Image (cartoon, rainbow, N blue to C red):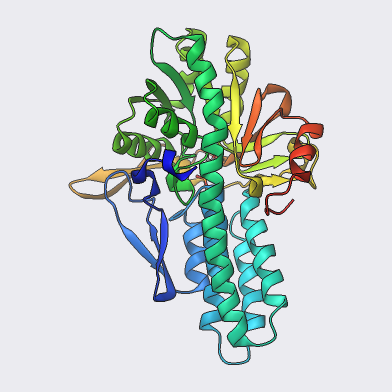
Length: 373
Ligand code: MRU
């Protein structure tokens, strides 16, 4: 499997030094695409702040950072207090961002590891080992998503053999939001590695402009692409300029409803009207089988109105922030929306592809792969 993954896609968004697992290094995604800055996370509070402030983002990466946050909590704890420190840190991490399921899967897994340890020394070691395993599993899940999704991308390409395959995506479901390779981008990168001609429509993704992160990744990988404002998506779909929509997810219910970055739902509606297939790619850690109806059951994060009131960019080599709306304008800022299963053509997971339907999802849930179900 690994031989078909291009080596540059293994450049990671998070790493530890093999001999110094006391510190986790991450890319500061707020500085991209203008500057590549690395941030060190030395404590559980650093990890929680990095998640809240979106230094790191994307459901799989949020989960991995939370797992490391709990390992750091145990390592920094005063003698005899590691168990309590881990529990406090777990509560703090769970309060950062409510929508990404992966965060809660990671915390639950680490709490179970901690509960199974008899003393602080064992707890420290076990939590580092488990965070490290979670990181590797997350990377492997994206590689499997890429391989499973490749068949969908190749089938779409066969329907229009005379020109490049035009894929539309939203937000950043790329390697920055994961450990490596990405979720929605994984099949794209693997298709390119096999010589398929692909073009990607990237939506800007207001208010945080994660589309810029996707463009940064695609440019680095040499994948042709164009950035469009979010409200242009319907236009390109209607004109027959999109062959396939491929997005990620932050939480998927047992019936197949998918929460993803705000603006995803409008793309799904426009894709349905235009007769364009709409696929959602996510690892099994993003599935929440305890929820049936995504609209009623998935907690949707509402973020600060300042994210909408101001735009941030670069000016003379530094960060600049300008107001686009006066302080008197009331603002609401939901970070995610829910696309109902009926608008989703299919799900691409590390366990395989399936319809966005309860029976199919439960079939995958039963399959052994070592992931939590
Ligand atoms: O608020 P973010 O940037 O953490 O949200 C991330 C997304 O919604 C992504 O689009 C993605 O699909 C999930 S993570 C690969």
